[in-house]
Amino acid sequence: MVNVPMLPYFELRAAIAIAFTAAATYYDLANNKNVPAILLYAFVAIGVLFNLATLSGEPVYAFAIPLAVFAMGFLFYRSGLFGSADAYTFTAISLLIPYANKQSYSLGTPYPFILSVITATTFLFGIAMLAKFIPYIVNRIKTGGLKLSNERKLSTALMAIALVLLVYTISRIPFLAGGQLVLMAFVIVMVLFFTLFRDEVMGSFVDEIAISRVENEDVLAIERMNQETVKKFKLQPYVDEAVMKRLQESGLATVPVYTKLPAFEPYILIGLAITLVIGDVFFFLAGL
Image (cartoon, rainbow, N blue to C red; front, side, top):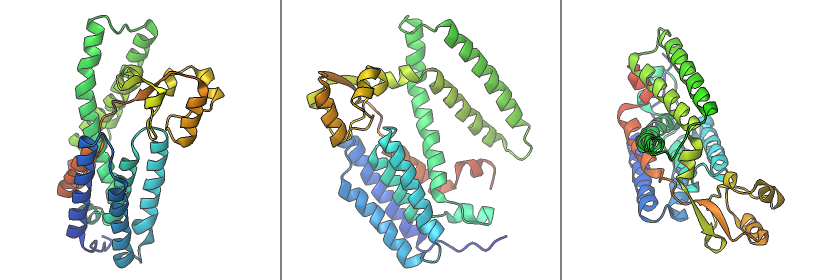
């Protein structure tokens, strides 16, 4: 087995990560999803300082991976998939805890801790969203508010068949444990559900609001707008100063905005806590 060095000041790093993520969660829930920038900058800065002082000889784990995390998070943020606070939080966690001692020693090589946090967070968020939207979709179908076209029924049947075949194929892989198969099957079901009912799910987060009420960092539901207008004024989902100016020039009275998106920081906090306790969920289910 490869000799994996202990992460310096692991317990202190973990405590700081929990404290800052808990603070971000509080603001995400209690302050209309507005997490103070100073809190996020401090979170990232502490991680950078820790690594400069203790991990200068491991630049990939100390800085390259966090930089990649931030780049991916920034792209998601600009696409309106999640908030800037979420991107900073994931980046700060990857700085403070570059790799986890538990998983590193199981595998014999440092394993990026942030990948484990993202796995747990996504799993938790998926459970919550399915618990919320499966009853919502079923109720709409029962009451006639949602009618499935023949094309959608066919797509559903074909995707269901593909799902069964994929799960069966995965189950034949000898080195996967039963818990891992359940997790993978769940992910496939989640993808299937949100692919089929994407418009209904995303539409439930949208409000039509006056242009005067649109703020910086709001997310436009441009797929629900007139596409000629979107192209003419080069509108993008993420609202910044440039997009705000174009909206005002467009002559539109109202625009669809994602005003009801769920807070994501609580899921990051719980995912972080679970990963610190048991390690990577996927590896835990395999007994590693």
